[in-house]
Image 1: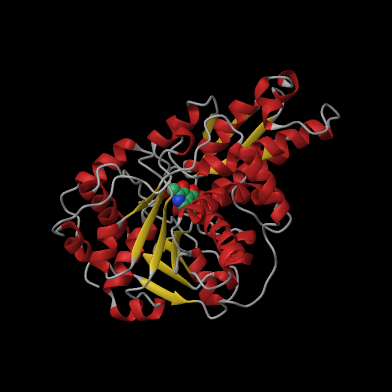
Image 2: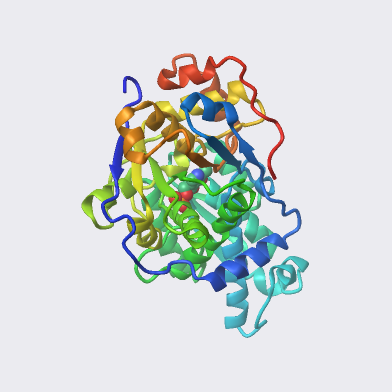
Length: 410
Ligand SMILES: Cc1ncc(COP(=O)(O)O)c(C=O)c1O
């Protein structure tokens, strides 16, 4: 497609039985903890009726995570939850409290002890913000590792929670390694959103937190989705969505995992039939998705549960941001948050992709707008850029009688 070339890889292992990556007990614990946090409210599920009409689909729903706990993205659910679990476990290990709850931690009851605990992680922006927020709430010290590509706006948002932000050379995967070394050397708690052999417990908690976003969306959907488009960085959120979908609706909804074409490590893994790393700068505007190494846990779920993988260009994400900005002022979506919508528009306009994914007039699509304008300056620059090739997005912008409902379903 002129201007927006994309790749679609149907997963040959779709439906093959595999391991349980997110046990139900851990999910219930995460749900009960997070829904009891002050300020918890489900984010809205918005019906994009005219987008569905223009694409020849029965329905398109967009779960808008922009308002999640005031942090701007779904990541608020994962990192902060894992921080509370890790800090509580550390208090137990030190013989201070056997089962400290998030409420105990927030009350300051163990403040003297938690002040001596440091949590750390690497981030492209959103995960670090969640971990820093959690550390402040639960009374721990926090050091966040970033690579040079993380914008100042995103660093400032992390530092605003009192965390120390440390830059290290290289890409996201290099900053993950730096955080791992620092944690080992300093006796700090590593709260990573990605997992690898021997390090799965904490990232599993992170993913259990993400699952709440998926469960809320499925609760609010008027009918089960036939297709779900979800963006992938290391794959954690896509895997959490996949687990929630399978638990409710078996393998019939088709899960499409969407990545930037310059950081498509999940697609590369699917093509290779094994977890595969994409090296290099991973230079994409979709900063939250700029990951070259899949998470082991995520891959264990997605290798058999994803129906297809797509890799899309930056230009299509910018076009999708503009579509939402121009047609529906209340949806301010960040670069990484719109990848699913961008992929849907591209696939729906391409006859081979449309047929391959089985996108038909009866199809009910669920999208996750995983972030709002998490870097407002960058957001403004991207949506007002003059030289964006809107390609297949143009007919959507020019739709007559465009009348997107303003009332969320939930
Ligand atoms: C807004 C947004 N969407 C999606 C993702 C992808 O999540 P994961 O790395 O778990 O695949 C991220 C990761 O940072 C993100 O910030």
